[in-house]
Image (cartoon, rainbow, N blue to C red; front, side):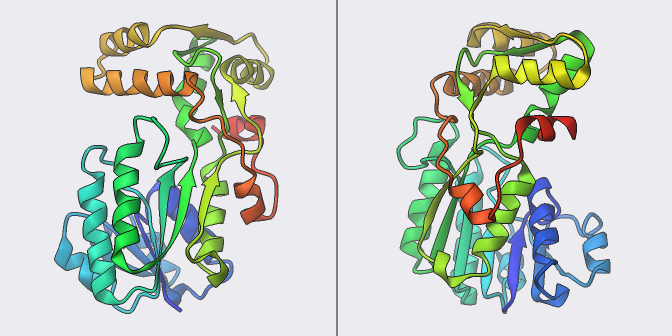
Length: 282
């Protein structure tokens, strides 16, 4: 059985490869990457490295030759994701890939979350592809808040427009362990998993946790989405990026990232990483 992972040198992809290496022979793992230089450490471990950007349909076809199972890690290019995912799915179908596991987003088909439409479109395209699919609807990564940790260290504040909204985050390593699990067991074919951390925390609790870790007070500075966008723009963030970040916080305030299903801890066979443990590593 040959397992391929797209975005294999990215934050999530490398965690998945490392997890697979604990149970699979390196030669049975294919790392699909954009930059072969970044993949040199994987090649040294014996992993097959194949270069194929999401935009290169010819390279994708060659990279997926002989692959049985594929983890399609969603593209990081918001606004271009669906077109890029479609390229991968088409190449996988042509290559005879038996299973695609896809990293989607929580409640992709029903949530108003600003990130959801491209994931919903991808899920629909997968359903029409004829390939057995496992949907990994990932919630938020705790590592996404590294910038807030840095702010807390420098200024003693955590600034967000999330109101009293809660986030059931987990670490990339947690989500990677779930991805590795479903790629190695046929019982997950055709399944959809809503993945999130075991505990949904508020930003006031986030600040309190940082206070304990840093040994000094950290305050949650709650602002409106417009105020956050203005602050980010003043700091040099492009207007589109600032508006997107503010919209994400508004979605958080609305509770779209707060669901705790238990699917993630069940898949990985252990509790998800506690917030304090995850923040201490940032």
